[in-house]
Amino acid sequence: MEEKKKLLMNSCDFMGVKPIMMDLPYPPIQVKEKNPAYANLLSIDCCGSVSEMTAITQYINNENRLSCEKCPVARTILGIAIAEMLHLQKLSELIFLLGGSIDFVAKYQDGRKRMWSPEYLSIPENMERMLTADIEAEKAAIHQYRMHMKMIKDPYIYAVLARIIKDEEYHIMLLQSF
Image (cartoon, rainbow, N blue to C red; front, side, top):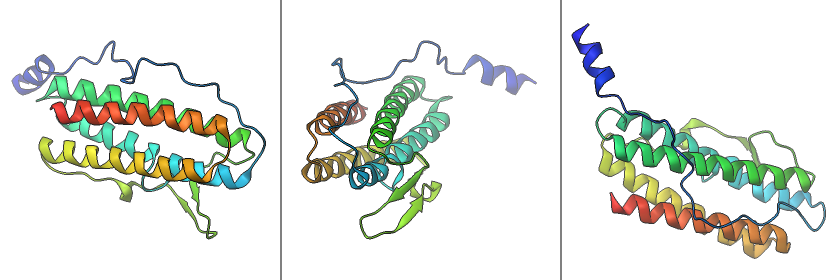
């Protein structure tokens, strides 16, 4: 009983945690025209191995494991996870507008389809390795977004991806500060 009381007293308060992102507006979520190939590219950003779904799940896992001992870090990680959820929502809306389906399946150019899986997660044991894995995941996401921006010839989608990259770069800066 005393152990439970101690845990409750040391619990991390997550009230008021907001998305951690750049203080910049997002461009309107619109597309020039329906394009299933573009929808498929964005499906990879939503739920491929390097994706918003992977980032959200990895951040939530890390936040849960750090919340009792490193509350300020855990609160920041939760705020980043919430921002990643917003990215997922925006990408999903673009996929829908492009005529694609929202089904947590990454659709690759070679015809392969793969449903999102927790095997994509990196789950290190200590905080330093967690943060390093998170930074590397953010860098990989930025790289992938830039590749997709070169392939997608829609200025509206390009603008949304460029705005998401600004958040990802901000996340790297915050994670490096820990």
